[in-house]
Structure formats: structure tokens, C-alpha cells
Figure 1 (cartoon, rainbow, N blue to C red):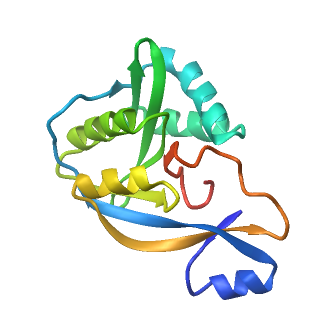
Figure 2 (cartoon, helix red, strand yellow):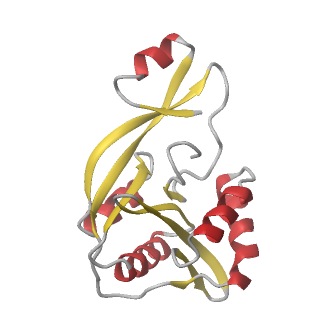
Length: 180
């Protein structure tokens, strides 16, 4: 799987790749919003986060999540409802601000609570997310929180390979364009 720009897509197609979906980049300044919020992630949340990610994304990528948590422990949030982990959001510092993702959630309500706490904590800083266009919930939440779409890439897979069978409505923002 790869994420190709519009300029690179014809080359990838000539090599046997095909389109799965578009991934939209959304950017803006973080600010605070009224409403319920999730909470910062604690070490005891990590096993449940890894299990939720494996359930929703449907492949094991704990090494990626653990690395993000190790490098950016203050950019990690979880949302619980009635004792059940509903979602998580991880971030990482970049040269230009903070990248938010992966952002995985069972519900739109949990996804919004996660986004609210992240934007409140990062108030005034530039934030970026890459949201699959197959997830209308993520696109609406980004727009409702004053982020704007700045560009898109095409998610592609090689030949007859099947796309990842992740729950497309649960993947609010990808971990990175390099890792999905």
C-alpha cells in the first residue's frame, strides 16, 4: 500500500497499483471548544489501546504506536464510556506543528471528545491530520473544528491485493502517509 500524489499516480498505475480511496490533508490552528472531552492517556491505558487498534485496524502495528507513545507521551489521549475504551488519538511534533494521527474511534461522539481535548491542549499551534475520504465523520469533525482541507493523495494497493479490511468508519486520521 502507498499514498501517491496526483503527479505520481500515473506512474504507480503503470506499475500495477490501483486506487483504494483518497486521503485528505486537513490543517489549521488548534483552539478550544465547548463540550465533553476525553483525557490524557496513562501507562495503564496502553494495553487496551493496542488491543483496540488491532481490532479496528485489523493488523498488528503495536510497534508504531509504542514508538509514538515513547517519543511523544504528552500527545496521547483516550476516551472511555461506561468503562469501555471507545477510542484514542496520538500525535507527534513536526517541524511545522503537531500531526494528529492515528485517531481511531468506535463512535463519532468519542472521536469528537478526543479531538476536543487535543485541540484544547494544543491551542494556538498548527495541527495537521490526514483523513481518508471514506470516513465522512472524520471530515465533518475536522471542518466543524475550523480545520481546512489543503490537499489530497491517493491511497493505492498493488495488483490484486485486497485493501486493508480496517473498519473505515473507525480510522479518523491515519498514522502517517507512510504507514497508514
